[in-house]
Length: 124
Image 1: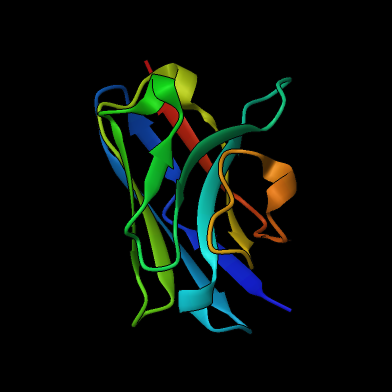
Image 2 (image 1 turned 90 degrees about the vertical axis):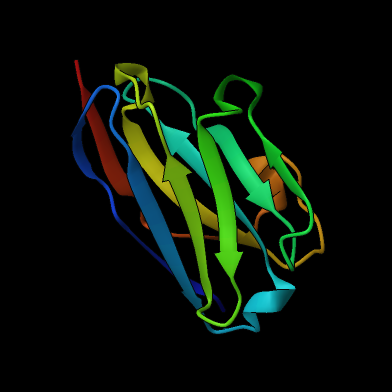
């Protein structure tokens, strides 16, 4: 079993930045594909970004390219999501997810483990 704990959420003004972190335990981190998803009030959960086992491959939601960056530090068992130029529409609960396969893509059904989420609120 894998445990995922997110942190770094909070309240930020539009145009600001936040960096989310997710620490994983319970399995060799370098053998987990890591992803971020988000769910805004009243909306379905949506894909944000994903990174492969050693970070050599990444994928982003088209609408977020250029503003969000996913990265990982396998020595720290941590995946990050750097979010810049934040907009009110980025307000959501952000979830960290892990998959046992070398690549998982953008589908949430491909991920095996989920964190509890961290709230990000962007004020206008």
